[in-house]
Length: 413
Image 1 (cartoon, rainbow, N blue to C red):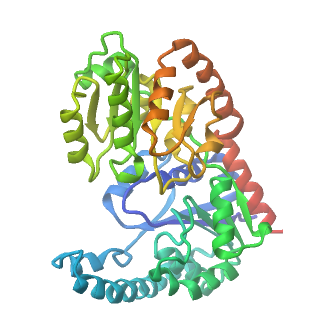
Image 2 (image 1 turned 180 degrees about the vertical axis):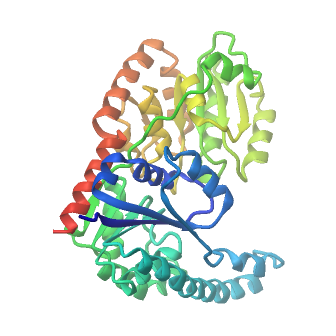
């Protein structure tokens, strides 16, 4: 008897946190025992390289597809001053036009693959909502190809209709709402927002947190720090792992460290991992505030779990555009206490004063207090035990995959 088929679809230019469940699905023996699975994704070398590095087997049914460029309007607008009226005028015309042209152009190549694969379920992996334009295309292509069941995974906070650029999405959103059988969110917070934006009934949305499969530690703490030419000198090591973007709140971390240092408090050594547009600004702040010996910006680390393993505490001072950060769950998988902000789904991950600390976003005083409290190794050890316990109960990849299998089987009844 032939197995039913599931197609997974995702469109991202790099392997962001919202992609973490894709290799978990493709690697799952439990899933493969029940279904024949395949994965359709944008044909980009960097994405494919990272994907392949996370697959335990190389015989997965992978279908890279050439899709219209998402940001072609940037090529048309980059010669104009972003603050000029001319830029705004053309942006309001070019961005919507190209968006809908790109959605239309992506339908046919996706339809061809979906039709050929004869799947019964399409699982769309997306960031926020509406997220990537081709998620619309995938829903349309699925229905044209006769796929009966569509699961739409939303990994961030849904965007409401306050922006004029979202107004034209209303008809597409109606189509998606009608033709998607189940929406899945990583956090309850994201589920509530999605339900509000799309006016979804609660029986059409389910919360399944992403599961984390801990990766191999290729270097122990001593070797990892040696590779970075870092000597702790008996200091604790705290780390922040995030793109260097404003919404990740790095500046508030640096302000908190400045407060502690000005108060003559002992502070940990901080490793800041990541690349992004804020790098120059953060470098300047570190230099001007005499934090050179306390904060090390190391760029993008090849093996994140080596850094997590070497760290005593992980800090994520995000101030917005966040939902259910994988780095917090990854830290919990290794028994690392975390400090996070009271936004989005982070309070669902961190139980304040149990497995970490929660602070208000953009509040360097609260963040400084939390960092200072976690200089106590007794608190670190207590939080570490609770972090590992919470991970084992909620965020192991086997738990997440099992819940998805139950969802798929319910839909096929």
